[in-house]
Every structure is written in structure tokens, then in C-alpha cells.
Length: 409
Image (cartoon, rainbow, N blue to C red):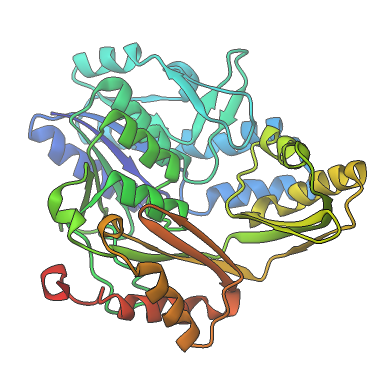
């Protein structure tokens, strides 16, 4: 089999853990598998590098930031290759530009546009383990880019798709995908398998097990993904195409996202084209907008509220305030003390009353809903951040997620 494996920052946090990863990779190689291993920077290294830059200036150049933080993965890739060779296993480390992994030019949150994996295939044909620095890419002009937080997941799945690998394994510090965050819900259960679509919704709603872009790629290219722990031999969670058994489960998981911020524009002219003027500059900067609510007013104006990642709030507010002046809006307000809680399940397609049950549960615990968003298999509510853990526990219990699916049915 051709297997792409990804090891996160905790998995390669120090030299002993890198040795453990090398020994695990060696066991796969002994079984006859061809391996491409994607690695993140050692735990805490990216934050350390970013803090150095921000000690110099509060607003460092995104291009130079990418040059800086990409070095973290380079260190890990070379150390793992050195370790594998010391164990007697041929290995070769690759940076993104050596493959190459081509991206757009949106520094610090670039998107992969093309991968030309011939050099990796050549290394595999020589019996080498190809060790790839995750998280990074390069533009057509040769500039280094990075893919944003969780970008190594995206690197791994993209390489698996380009190489037509048999499996992509994501090794992390948890044993798989759970019905809720085990740190908050003690009775959370590990799922044996979950559909691409459910995982995509969980990731978009804040689940940190797998980057949302990695799930998108896996779904488009039908890459089977196995999320499992670096520190255990236990099987993890398989992310794959939906089947009939998955549809029988009403709700598969409850998740939350504290990295949310709210922006409100009051007194916006209620005219065609105004929304495009507001959201156009935000889209050009690659800032993701999640929930949007517009409320009409009797005076011919409207109030518009939407959410963005908290890390991009300052930039988004600056862009919105500029547009607000141009269109004559009354004022712009923002808030960071919010969180999003979501329930996800393929069974929602064929079961009524799921949203109502969620709203009733939150109301019973005195939790006010500020915004609501729905999809075919997800319901999300924005609430006051201080109620996040209470909401997650209450919803997990209300939908019977602490019980096996057959017992719930």
C-alpha cells in the first residue's frame, strides 16, 4: 500500500517523540508499505517564531512571516529523516518548493493550486521514505507561503490525492473523532467512522481534530482518512463516504468554536449591491465569513450582523468601517465574547424536530441564542461565550450521545 501519514506538533514535540515517530514509520516500512510522511513544526515552535516577529513590530509583513514560520517544519522534516537513516531506513526530506506544492499568493493562509509529485514518486521507487515539511507551499514566482493553522493536515490529504494513495493517516494527540470534546464531556464516545460531509460540518463548526480544507480535499478526491493517536496502537476514526448505517444516527456529534467574533453594521442602506460592497473587500483578503443575519427597518435601512474568525477581527473591522463610511451606514460594532455551538448528523436529513429540540435544550438551561445557522445536517447557534461548556454538555445529553447508537435508537 501507498500510505501518506501526518504527524502533528505534539507528536514531534521533542527528539524522543521524533524517535518514537521514526520507530512507528519503520514498522510500516517493514510491512512493505510505501510511505510519505508529512510533519508539523515541533509543538510551540510556530508560536515562538510568531512572537519573535511581533516583538519587532505589531504588524509584520505577511510575506516575511511565511519565510520565518516555514522554518519550523523544515527542522522537523530534516530531524525525522536523519533519525530514520540512523535506524537503517533510507529517507529523504523535502520542502514544498522541492516537490513543488504550488499555491496562490495569499500569504499566511494560502490555498494549494497544484502539486507535481514526480520527485516523491522517484524517492518511493528507490525505496526511500519521503518526509515532507507540511504547512508550506510556494507561489509561481517562487515565494514561500504557508497554509494557515492546521495546514499540515491539508498538505497530507493533498499529497494523498495527488499520489492516489491508498490511505491517509492523521496522527495526533487524540484517539479519533469523538461525539464531543472529551475534555468538556467526560462521557464522550469515540466514533468508529464518520462521513466526509459530517466531518466537514464538524470542522467548520469548530472541531479541531482535522482542518476543514483537508476534509474538503478528502471528500472531493475520495481519500480515505484514518484519524488516530500517535501515542496508542488503538484504531481511530475512519472518515469515508456516507452509508445507510450513518443515516440512522440522528446526531453524530456536538462541537463548539470559541474563535468567533461578531461584527454588526447598523443603518445600512437597504439597496441592491450594498451587501456585495460590504463583503467584497473581506473576501479579497481571504477572511472567512460564517453566519450572516440581515434585519430590515421601517426607515428603508437595515442592520447587518455576521461572524468572522476572532483572529481576523481587527482586519475585518477596519475593512468594514471603510465601507461603512462610503455607503453612509450609521455605525459599526464588534464583539469577541461569543461562541458557536453546533450539532451535526446525517440523520437530520430524514428526521424533523432536531432544531426545535436544540433550542428547547438551550432555553431550559437559560442560554440565550443570538444567531442561528442551519444546513442539511447541521444546526449552529451563537451564544454568550461563558455558557459554552454548559451548552455542549446539555446538548450531548439531550441527544443521547453518551449512549451507543443502537441504544439511542
